[in-house]
Amino acid sequence: MAESRRKKKERSVSPPPAATIERSFRFVATTELLDRTLNGMRRSQAPGYMLSVLAGPFSQLQKLKSLLPPAAEYLCYLIHGKVVYIGHGNGDRKMGDRLGADAKAGAQIYIVYSIDPRFDKVQAGYLEARLIDRLFAAGLPLANDNRPFGMGLREDAGLEQLVEQAELLFGVTGFRPHDAVGTVPVQGSRGLPGTRILRDVVPVEPDQMPVPPTERYRLNYRGLKAEGFYAGKKNFYVEPGADYAVGERRGMTTHNKARRKGIEKFLDPISGADNRMRVRVGLRCLSAPIAAKILTGEHIGRRVWQPIA
Image (cartoon, rainbow, N blue to C red; front, side):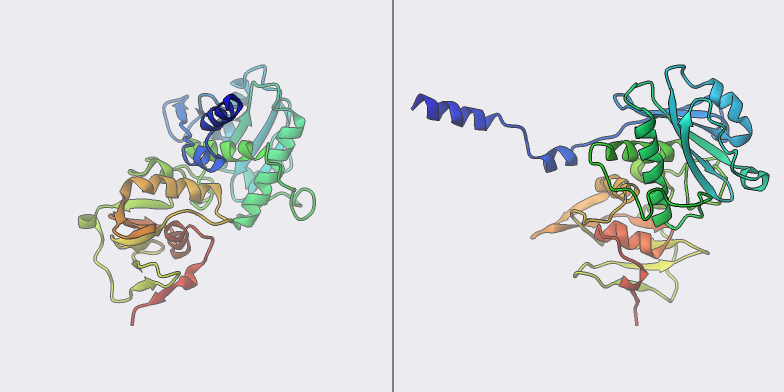
């Protein structure tokens, strides 16, 4: 009997399932403007995490390298100019030496480093390879000649957290891959912390929504209800009251997960529905496919938006 009670007690204090831990994950980062401007040198860090990022104009590369701590032996870096180049190496690495002057003109550079000795050549190389894979999949113009390891590197569950940390820190530091290449906005978007990362999704109060044009679209996917329209050259607006699918399927990128996480504060429950909620604000999205991904939690394209007759 005593043995039975002891086993029952042990079960009662067992840790929560992994899914519960993942849902409670919060990533808080700070950005320091080293010369008091968003266009200049800046450093982003997340307390309690391994990686940090230094960023700034490529023309100030030597000054940025002088700010690296002596303990930062290995680096991974991303150059965002007319094309994107990703590399890794030690602190003496000649970053950008494989790029021509035209590719580096006006470019920004983002240097990932760590004072943790575990961030070694293997981890820096893995991070380089995975970033190339992910940006290749996102359709960015890459200057790297080949994807590492052929058609992609087999994912290592123990190292994927480094990839997520790096991507989030890149975004906080100003890397916006789908903005005009080589630029940094002079003012960040207002609104969601999770969507400020790439400026691709911005909440809009109902009374600030633009007047819908004649041509409007309706989401036709898994019974979700949402309507939207194009306004301006690129923006696709989702009207307030759209359905939002709870949970995500495989294939969603870290950036899209971060955007969806940020939108949670704008969701209201739907009576009798446990698999969807309602977005009480409008959403200004960079494109219709991004709007679809945010609402459905799936990697789908623009075809799910069908014209309203």
